[in-house]
Image (tube, rainbow, N blue to C red):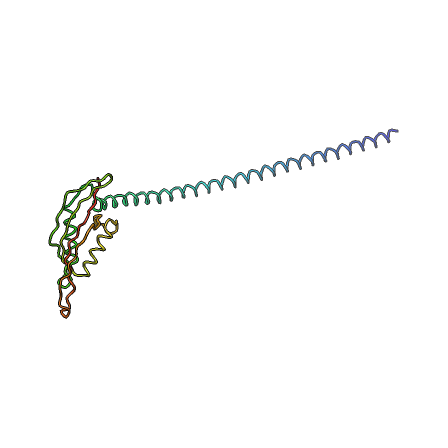
Length: 205
């Protein structure tokens, strides 16, 4: 009887040991899984932080670049506005400014006129300005002696006036009277045209 009790007790102790070992193994496994999952979370968090730092650095560089580009464009825009404002003083002035208009015509005469291709302004007669609701007009009559080629160039100049590229006073022709001079066909000289032209030069009200 004593021997049986001893064996039962020994089996009970072995069962306790196995149960304890299983519980310890289960606890160790759970701790390992918990530790591993936290380590994975930590690694992912570190990667996220690193990516965020790279993103912030990239965005900072982009902002700096965009700001530099915007500053350059702003400077270009300011300069462009200054250039346009400066040209508008010539193209569409705030007053009749007939003095500078006369200088412009004199300069154009010097530019075109040659011995074989004349362009001679003999008279400029300014009339009283006409004021409209949104702009004003300075009427002027010019008497010009010109070769046919320079006559065509003069018409193109008036046609293209007011362009920012040409930078010439805004004008148009309201009337023109032509007189063709007789030329010796064998002389080789250009055909001469004497004409009187009525021009409207515009300025701001």
